[in-house]
Image (cartoon, rainbow, N blue to C red; front, side, top):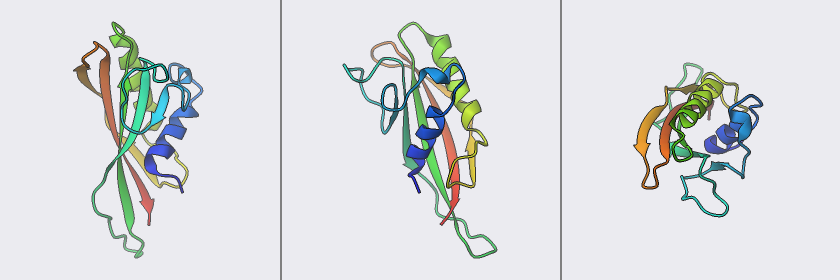
Length: 134
């Protein structure tokens, strides 16, 4: 079974509709923390990171449910707030209640605008929780 951030990144990579069809895993969609723009990390990019989760829930059947919190960071191009916002909303729409292999449920909240980074890129954050039986 894949790690939660890898599963979410793969789910985003599989979206074939615009604007998320512009993202490709390993090119401008990455598993792991947000990284600075470089020759291999573009300005417009998405980063997916597992950020923990609460203790497991016990089900009446005796099988505990493990909950994983995942953060999706969306960075837009400079002076492209509306494009970054559309990307963030599309991520939420693609992930909320999505069927993700190995997980029982995926729930996402609305994306939050975090402001501009030091280089004037608009930043959005989307948090979600994945459930799976342990």
